[in-house]
Structure formats: C-alpha cells, structure tokens
Amino acid sequence: MNPPFDPSQVWLILPAFNEGAVLGGVLDSIRPHGYQAVVVDDCSTDGTYETAIGRLWVHVLRHPVNLGQGAALQTGISYALQRGAGYLVTFDSDGQHSIGDVPRLLAPLVEGKAEVALGSRFLRVDSAALNEIPRARRLVLRAAALYTRLTTGLAVTDAHNGFRALTAAAAARIQIQQNRMAHASEILSEIARQKIPFVECPVAIRYTPYSLAKGQRLSNAFNILWEIFTGKTRR
Ligand SMILES: Nc1nc2c(ncn2[C@@H]2O[C@H](COP(=O)(O)OP(=O)(O)O)[C@@H](O)[C@H]2O)c(=O)[nH]1
Ligand SMILES: [Mg+2]
Image 1 (cartoon, protein in one colour):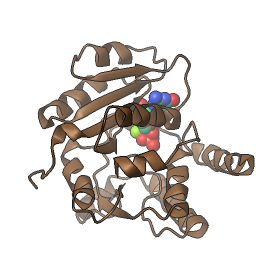
Image 2: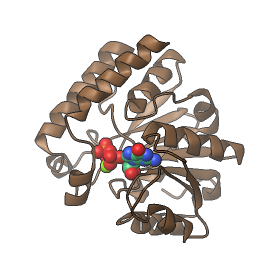
Image 3: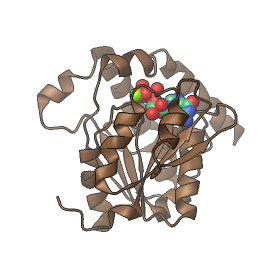
Image 4: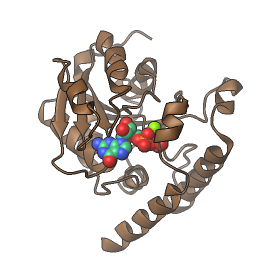
C-alpha cells in the first residue's frame, strides 16, 4: 500500500531498556520511511541512549530513574502530541516488530474506519508464522486475550501486543497510568470504557534468541495480573 498520508505526521514511540545491541538496526530500518521516531530510554546501562542520540534525526528522551515500559510510552506519546503528531505508533526497540507492517496498521485510521489499530500476531494467514510463537507463550497470550474478553468485552485475539497505531485524538484520550507491563491491559480497558472504535490488524512478531532471552518471562504474567488488580483497586 502506498501511504496516502504524510509519513512525517506519523510518530513512532520506542520504549527502550538496554537494547544497545539491536536499537541501531531498528532505527536504521525506520529512517528510509520518513516517519518520526521518539526513543524513550529508561536509564539503560548499555549504550542504548548513545546509540539513539548518535542518530540526529531521532528524538531521544530519558527518564531519570527506571519507570517502566508503560511510563515510557506515555512520556513519548505526550511529547509527540505536543509536537503535532497526526498518528502515533507504539513500536518495540528490540527488533521484534517489522517496519513494513506500519502502513497496514495506519490504513484503517487514515480511512476513518477506526481510531486505534491493534496489532495481532494471531491474525496472520501464513500458518508458519504461528509456529514461530513459542508454545508456552502462545498459551499465556491466548489466556490473556480470553481474560480481556471476559473483563472488557473486547473481542481481541492478542491482548499483549506492543505494536499498535492510534490517531492523535485517541492517544490524547488514553492516559497510561500503569507504569510497567500492565499498560497493555490498561489501554484495552480504556478503549472499552471510552468506546473508542478499534480494529485488529495482522502483524509479524519476530522471535529471535535475543528477544527470547531478554524479553518478558512467562512468570511475569502473574506480575501483570497483580499490577492490574492493584491498579484497579487504587482507582
Ligand atoms: N523505557 C523502557 N522500555 C522498556 C522497559 N522494559 C521493557 N522496555 C521496552 O519495551 C519493549 C518490549 O519489552 P520486552 O521486554 O521485549 O517485552 P516482550 O516483547 O513482551 O517480551 C522493548 O522495546 C523494551 O526495550 C522499561 O523498563 N523501560
Ligand atoms: Mg520483546
């Protein structure tokens, strides 16, 4: 699809924590597309910040203490909105997301069919792609999608996918308060509560030895449930 939008209106928000080994490659894959990129570093100790700041076209923000992925997304989103972003895309810094999927997420927003497009790794038609998702991870993700259906009524197939696109209006309406990983559930709850029109779109999630070694452990699913529970009772 040729983008019927101005790519400079599209802001990619990249939360980053100790991704120095791969962040340069991720940023270099974004550059030719003409999108804006905001890296939100969270006190990385491995050269993540230096990698980002060395690319003069990248906007680089840094939290003074580690606050978490949810907090970093909100920092990046607020920054992009202040600079007049038209569309915002949340994009991982660890190489798991493919820049080529961005136009597919943006299309329903540009066409006015939805305000949020949620990436789903389970909607891909090529069955080989599903085989790439480690089995235990697939089960936890299916359970998370079921939990989301039961608690929010949203019929999503992939509840913890960090690859999504939002119009500026939707991004302004969703205030992420969950600093760490429960923000993904929080975004879905807000979509349901505010009845924000959304669609799911197929996206690829790349599983590499790097991403599997460094990414979230399955046991963290319990932490996420705890964050959701304690976050809910705080309100
Ligand atoms: N700013 C920031 N980014 C984080 C933090 N934890 C993870 N991330 C980033 O969020 C993205 C997804 O994290 P990851 O651990 O790979 O989650 P997974 O893909 O769900 O296993 C990556 O780009 C990470 O660098 C954090 O504490 N702060
Ligand atoms: Mg990851």
